[in-house]
Length: 364
Image (cartoon, rainbow, N blue to C red; front, top):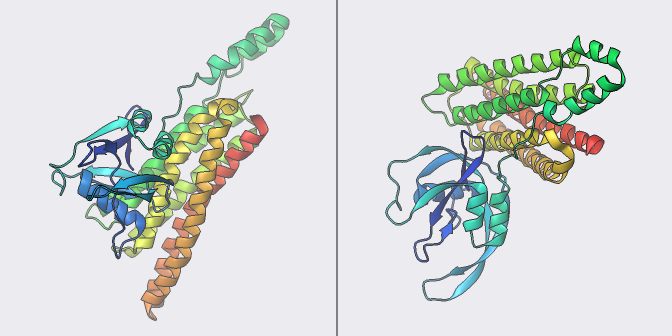
């Protein structure tokens, strides 16, 4: 499923037309020998739609449909769907003249898909609903009532900051996670823009540090906070730890001048991109916990699923690195350190999921 995040913040999905029936579908194809499932999916996305991007190795889900054969018969097939964060549109691709393509908001794309199960998977990429600010929803009504009852309290409140920026700061920090994860995934491709990607990750990490400091400053100075202060500190702490681990990965790459990376590292980076996207949506939904409790449960469950897959890739990658080192202890040490930071970054996203689940339990 090729997707991109529009400037408005909403998710857009690319659909293409099938060659025979001309109905709207996602790029898909058969498994390819020598390629993992998500790699084969990315290959088909390029051949059919000309898109290049970062494929997450953990499937969003599966759906079944009746595939029509050339002899007129049909057979039931199961399709696994992998998210592909598009980074580039090729100028030419194999099936360019055989299909049409278009970018659509996720909700609209889901309506055009005939398969109901696939439509549900696509609609899961819906943009976060617009929410009123904390001041618009809570603060005026509470403060107006208090001022009428206790005039002295109105004078006291005038001396205090009126509202915090917690939601805005959390959302700004989540944006640094998305940008940092994408830069790290591109860095692990081993492209010529290596230094630019390292610099971008460092820049995003510094931005995240500034935002985290602002959150902690508001926790100290704001009279009324939307959540328990320890919950606010815990959530921004694990979010900041995630971007710190991404930056630590880039620092090791710069220090040891690593230029080639195994596929398992790239796959973990793909998981980071998907985890950051999910976190961005989840953070936006914290503004109204009660109404969004069910969706937050879905998002946090997906984050935990991604972390479990990352653990598997970490074990496989570490074993492969030991074998490939062939007695070169330093080479193995460097690979182990890279894998460690990548795995720690994914672990922090599980911590984010746990913090959000705690908020839902406490406040929903």
